[in-house]
Length: 316
Length: 230
Figure 1 (spheres, rainbow over the protein chains, first blue to last red):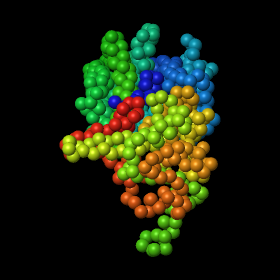
Figure 2: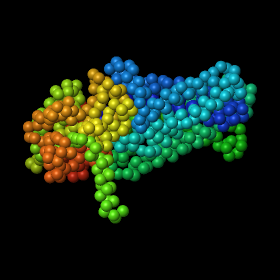
Figure 3: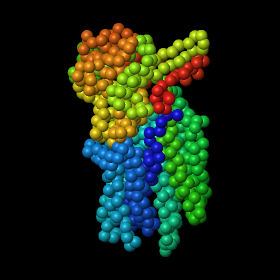
Figure 4: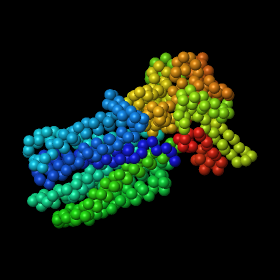
């Protein structure tokens, strides 16, 4: 086994950064799509929860990253500032700037939703709308660049796939949706507008279902193309096709994070989708789906980060 | 396309892109037939740079192969390849690692490097390590401090069998240019597209996969900490 240079801090960051960015993107796009929250109270509520969640995991994740730096380990607390004294085409350089912008914008965006009496058309309305327009590209950028960062190196054949960034983006959006649903599940009080609540819950669950089905497809493409090549990439993918990370990948990520949640969601979403019946997912099921999706998102980052490092180029 | 004049000018353009605006282009040829695996270069390098325990900038791998009585033992000295297209440089977010315009050596500014370890992943040869004292990434730099004074790199200077030949390939009369002109050479992992400037004569590529394919016993020994070739 080769050395693991990037450990738990990087895995935690990839997971939390994706989750926060995903929550921010979902919040901002739901907000913009519902005519800045005017269309329904439920949509504004989704946007509010997403906005309040977004900056926290990203900031915690970036904080964790600092602990992986060699300069920090020798007691040089602030050498990482060098990242922001330059900009180049390294995915990490572009990613650092994106992250910095995302943190600032998401904090301002969250600020416009603070206060229990925030509602569509209040005094922060204009600022909120401007920030929402910025949140979408910045959030997609943050979610996407991590996959590009890992994928940029021929020396890491497991990571060196253009579809890895897509997988990370979809997983980020999916965990973002799950985190919003989870927060609403735990803290969301009763609303007078029962129809609006049902609509918004249905919107989130069906979106999550769609995202997970895309994720299943992307995972299939990722594995299939790697397996069909010869050489380093095929050798590397063997680590999840019979190698040391097989059970973690298939049980921890595919079954727990994708298959079980999508089956549960299908059971409750399909009746409304096909037969226009009422959408009513039990509270406990909602909680379970969210937790499974979030655990699956973590497992994906864990397996990918470790698998990329225990495999390498073959031959000399 | 077939116009010979165009062909020539194209070649000229390529040459400009790759080489000629560098006053010097340092390269090394390693004649593995002359290497006896004494590890003198490994030791010279470690003492030259006070490389911490468990790490190495340069080392010698040995490849033991065959079934008794038909056996062989070959050596493969390793060091930073000073690639023409270094993938470590293109991923560095701070610009701490860079390819020098004046001689093509890939160097690291340890004051700027934040130790993010991205380049350690990007290097297909596993030549980089995190220095535990500086918190920066470190690797072979062709002994720049010696070479700039006109002295050969420590590993070249100490090599008993003259297996390591170092010099400037922009100078046609240098030993390294003559070696490149007259010998069949190869580079390590050419498929990575990094275009190394360290060339090998008779490098043995046998490894576990070769052993599986041919049924020949092979054991690769390296003095890296993880005891495995990366």
